[in-house]
Length: 328
Image (tube, one colour):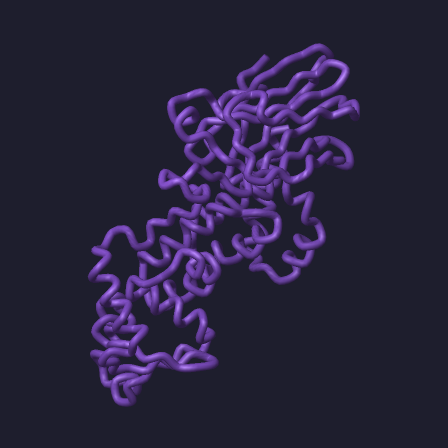
């Protein structure tokens, strides 16, 4: 049996194991695959029923910080009409060993099939004894600067301390500081150095952003952004980062958008990856759609996407599809 028979493919928060010709009275364990902080295994056993197990590899990390997992697991026929069996969604289940999650399937499965695991969240027990903490909500947006200085800078914005410029969003205005904006963005710096209307009127019009998104954008610039508002406004922040040439914000959005690609957002993210030249995000979206065959699960949305997407992007998608077909 080839090494590929044990390999689990992963992308973002998705893992897939392709099974070929699983005989009766057979046990098979996958190679380890990385998801979050842990190496994981899938295992299948076929007797009168099919048993599927998901568990982390035994290690000091697993013993000290066992994952508390939320996930959706499916078994999908990889031929014909791709019928799927879906286990009820698992929420916040601590998994330490290979007996902590076992799915017994009574429906007989023949031929080729795929075990598909979509990780919704992974948590660890809080060292302070509080609620478990998500490892994907740890964010590193603010960790590189001194907390006291950032707090003071944030107060300058929230309390409008000596503001000298007005930011006009589409539905409201916010006071800000020329020096702070100019230090964070070469585009703002150029505005304030030259004899433009922004210099004369002490105002900057950002009509393509709502007041809410604009506030979050300024919160990032001033080092005062919360993780939840960053996640909620990632696409607006990406647009602003590209427009005002704030490379660290653009990269933060890029890395964050890679973490939770799913069927609901993959086409929008692919479009934005193409628009803002984000190669890793584009590659991950392509892989999710083609390598993991999720394109079949969103046929209607994909057909609508083809009606309005950029021609070059459509050509890239079909190139990926053709390249994948060559592997069969």
